Length: 165
Image (tube, rainbow, N blue to C red; front, side, top):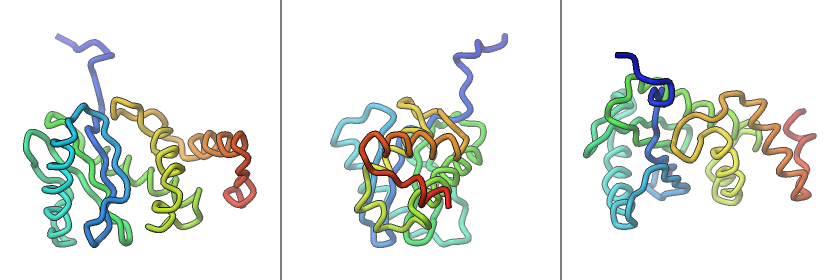
């Protein structure tokens, strides 16, 4: 029997954690309901586990009742918890990459300090890419940037010239 379209999901991200090489959490976004204690446990256990992995090791690991897909860019680790029945972990890696590319375009070669000092913009970009249930909302980098620039112009922060040049 074929599943109805609303039940088919390409990927369902449960959470996204950005951590530095030193293990400091720079950004977290929870798409599934977790208690504060569960959130703290996940961050406390996952961060050192991912940081201890060698560069040549697989970017997909089993953790608790789900899978973890991660990728390192410069000094930041992008860590996503995904549903255990996700068929395509590579799509999660692509979502992470799209997020990094979009932030690169917005900040002009994003670095850890950009996320520390402009974390609200990092959240804005993430919120344009992923819906509140952890599924993909927008895959077009240009559309995401256009929406974030619109938000900037409404706030009086016009970065449009810098990003488009």
